[in-house]
Length: 171
Figure 1 (cartoon, rainbow, N blue to C red):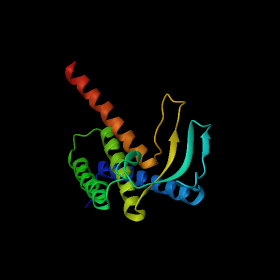
Figure 2: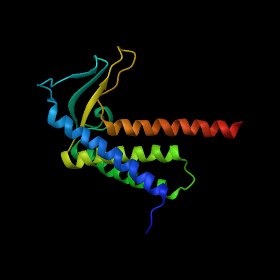
Figure 3: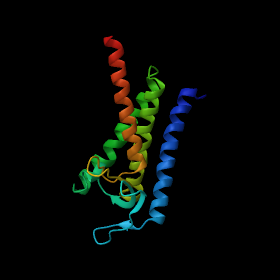
Figure 4: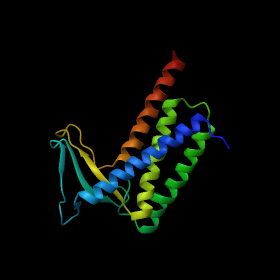
């Protein structure tokens, strides 16, 4: 079976997203002291106090949501459901030939980021988060990782593309 350029593009984006995320997490786990309730861990300023690296283990989803759920619910909501959704989106991306390159990139980034975080949950029982942005109270994030950034970037691209398509159809 010969893969099309489009399929190769999708696979490359997904694989690169997973690889960059997993490599960054290995580096963080090996070189930055883990932050726990009893140990504040290291805070490495990248751009003053506005952009900081640290090592946090997240047993929940985005911003720790779901970490207080019982084990069965956590497995269903943070492993089983995401695997089904990622599989469905992956199938959609390969089947829908009408998607433009930006949408392909966005979906592939979301899939790659999702797979990377699901892998962490399967391999380690938690996800390593390490980036934090605080722009003096104007804008502040939770602690996140590159997989989260890929998913968020993909969602933003899809939103922008959706608005552009709506604008074209209404004018």
